[in-house]
Length: 196
Image: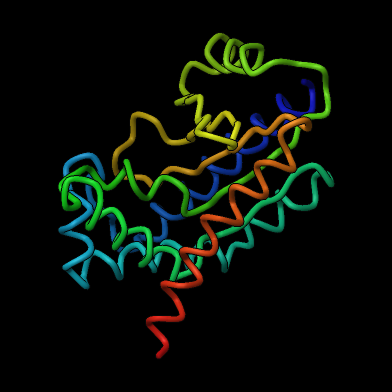
């Protein structure tokens, strides 16, 4: 699990550096993502623009490139604009009409995935995170065929956007990609409907 521990330390440093830069550059300050609801953001262009400015900031600072170059077992992506719109719309329609805190929805503007080849269990990973990295939010995100641990950077600071680390075991990789494919089909259908 050394590769995982090294990655977590690296993300911690990158997250801190990028967000210090964000705050020091006096970019439009975000909002309290625990207090503002998804539907308020969905229906208010000013809020949405603040999210997109942060997204562009991540792109201009090439945060995904730093992570992708670490290992072939690690993937990274910055959420596309349409993917942000889609997630806000879906949450507004299906999660209490979007009357939930924004940080429950947009916790993955920047997402990282590592596929662990070591012979470890999900329980080993959860124990490692909880004991060694108590500042991280760690969730067992198993649902149907999808098996993963999701870890969130940014816990405790509701003014900063969270980053998500997905931890997959190698044995679950194929089913997880299939599960993502099903989700992606709904997104592609949504995107096609918007372009018609």
